[in-house]
Image (cartoon, rainbow, N blue to C red; front, top):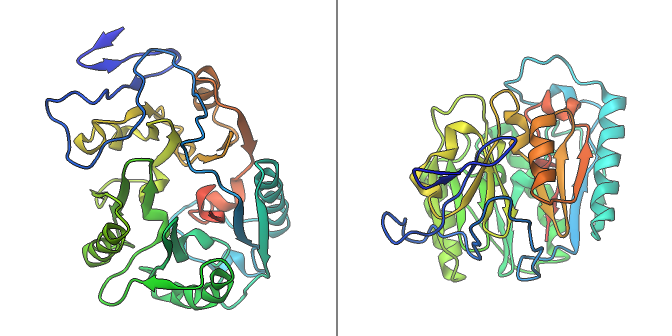
Length: 304
């Protein structure tokens, strides 16, 4: 059923944005759109193919990191087991892993995605919005140098967390949040433009329940994104097919497409059912201990 330009599919809504000429957002196109209810992903090789990932095991003082969640203190042995299961899932997706040692100087350092933005054109080192995390970037620089001999960086007064960057085939969405300020977003947009890449800002300040843009948004491939209800109706995403995560399962929006698989947090049956209905090859992972620290699937690796 089509209602007001939106496709409605069972078991919950998929908001289809089919690139209508009227009301298009310049530079915000999600490419390779094929409108149709119940369309199955084609897993086209025009999507990026990841070959490597950098991960870092949580340190013993993981629970001392920053969090806004009120879900209790994480269980460290359980977090280690969940992290290893995550690493094995990446290996199953065909990735070779660079495993970094735990870094107790920085309790949040297992969330390596926040330290860099990686593109085919090189590495861009971030400047995290939380001052306590700035040292994580310095320690990551050497690890990235093995794969990216030269790099660029966000500088003061700009701040930017990698968790605010959602890359699609056609556009890079840059979240402006409590961690990524407008100056940092502008710097990144300029650096991406030098590589011929388009970017669009998404202001999430004031959106409840999410720390970063990718706390509530994920690129699923083939022009499709998953989004929490608070983001799903944004004009910014008009030219994407939006899978709306149902209320109560917002955490599941942080899923992760890696080659021919889609990693998702376990325990969200409506989201799982809808993604399976759409034809995704799902790898379900228990993320309970990382959720307690505001972390998700995308946070735990740098993929390239």
